Image 1 (cartoon, helix red, strand yellow):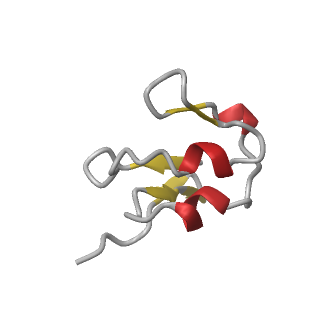
Image 2 (image 1 turned 135 degrees about the horizontal axis):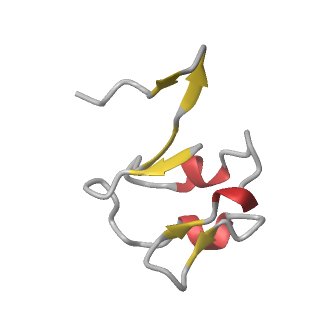
Image 3 (image 1 turned 120 degrees about the vertical axis):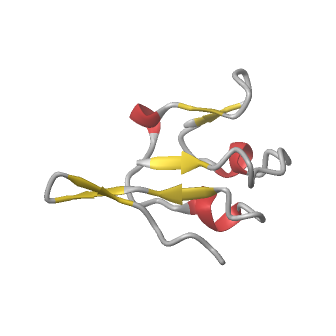
Length: 70
């Protein structure tokens, strides 16, 4: 699952045009349609200049988030 960190987002909307499936929507303010997302694609994560988009995974029933940048 992808998460957009609202405090890191610069609202440049780089994630919207690079998404091959249209999961990031311009109609809703940076809305995300998880059912359209290709798991493992990561194009939007790589395109985001501020690191506001990151993946969250489930491991043995618990949510595993990436370490926060210091």
